[in-house]
Image (cartoon, rainbow, N blue to C red; front, side, top):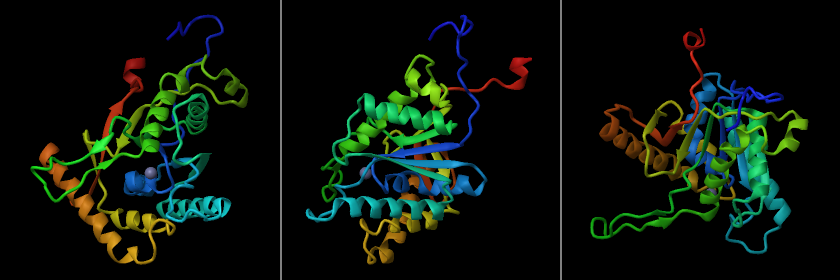
Length: 272
Ligand SMILES: [Zn+2]
């Protein structure tokens, strides 16, 4: 980027306000990806915000459901989950579910969020993850699945918003008048990734994660309450097993992320 000492140069803000901003494609994606870590960090007094890119209108098997009612219901489910987890703020960007693309409008909306919350860390989908599937010869009874296009789009939009736009004084200059100053995100944590390098011990909050997911009643009917908490524990235990194999960590339940550091604040001794 340009000369930071040029006349009229605007200093990029590096001091975070929120600890984390989680950005998922649909209502419930933030829950699956980060609910337990969000709840854990919130319990440590850290400020966490969540955002949902789409309106969630394609998340149903019923074609003739009332669109507006459905949007409001899903928002309310997400708010309930956030309350359970101690998430301080939740934003709904209302792009059309199933049709999300990485374009100027979606990127600008995310730049606004980043400049508003100034999160130290951003969590989002790993956009490079397209296909999840085991080798059929090794696991003949397992099926694979394709990552939702909105998940990949969200990951790409968020990464492109983080760099260079959110921290560039000449990007989206109209936002400056709204006091949305250029801000540098310190780290990204990508979820739903096959390239995990960071494992968070979520033993304290795994049950809250299941409760948060169960708040999404349009997605999981009341019957899910009997087996979803067990499934969540099994999944988190498998992740903990990977943590043991990869990092020698001894934890019971884990959430996994691909963590990338983008900015390390200078220590007081460097500045001296
Ligand atoms: Zn989703």
